[in-house]
Image (cartoon, rainbow, N blue to C red):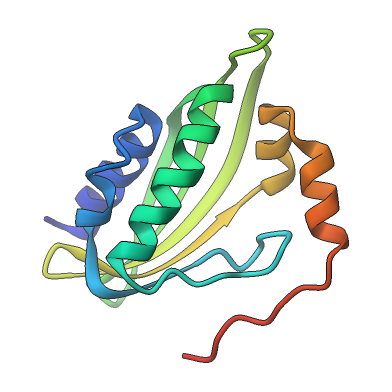
Amino acid sequence: MTPSEVFLRLVHGVAAGDYASLPALYAEPTDVRHPMAPGGDHPLLTRAALREHFGGTGPRVASAISFVPDNVRVHETADPEVIVAEFEYAGTRTADGATFRVPCIFVLRVRDGLIVESRDYVDHVAMARARGRLDELFAAAREPRTPAAAS
């Protein structure tokens, strides 16, 4: 699969709640980071860590909101392994039907059809607002940030 195809499988799989199959999109080892996470970046470096991440975060998100990727723009770079993808998650909150849009930018390195590196930049305020979890986000933001492990 091309980097664009892998990215599209990823974001559509997240939106569909297909969390069990998502780790197979990543190489072993891998390097997934969320540099803008309010509680600090906690790199995901193995498929097992990704299974835990998707298995924990995914169902909590899916119980609060439903969404699809929208306004997807994939930019190829001079490096054939690397793409920059701009998109939004557009959806509705389960509790009250309120609509939302969450802007995102992912920078992915895909080698042999698997993600070997990903930097996922998500508007965490917009996502927390969509899920009705702003208080949790603000609490996480008040905590001292822990630096990411050196690569």
